[in-house]
Length: 250
Image: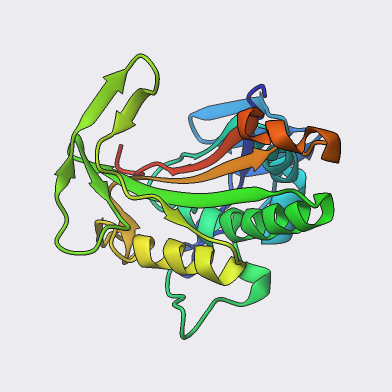
């Protein structure tokens, strides 16, 4: 799949509104945004633009996420990068409110791209009748060290390796199988609560690390009954859907 750059304009915070700040980024439609700051006046083009009033559902449906889920199920490696300056709303777009927990989940309308993609993946799997094996891994990169966000116990740095067959991989990385939306959302919340954060003027829980949640999708091809004895040698599709939440401080 080719890159599909999209931009989402963050609404003004309460603090910005109180001090009289004005919005300087405006959507012009057809994938164009105009920046009208004091020393910078320019127009930029993207595949899609979401203004400050766009809902989480609108971002999911208009950003191409549903197509990426389907491509991952077909065996492609798909990646979603969320990047922008500190306080621009990267983690909110991916996950929704950070205050959510298993005991107090976020309102369905506020769920981010990740949870909506999980729902889409499981629904597509059921509708296709696919025999899927799903697992997830969750890493963070902080100060050039890789940590596993799903492994129990105190965090420790994991080595990055390379091999001819696997390419680059993280040694001893934990991959957890899941079969339901509740299970993968639980893993997401468990890992996100272990991320390194610190406070700044716009957010008390700003991410200070790069986080990579990868969904591994393995499906076996279906064959007629006459070939059942040969299924052990049949190839399987293996796709991945990776969400990368980059640190704003970078």
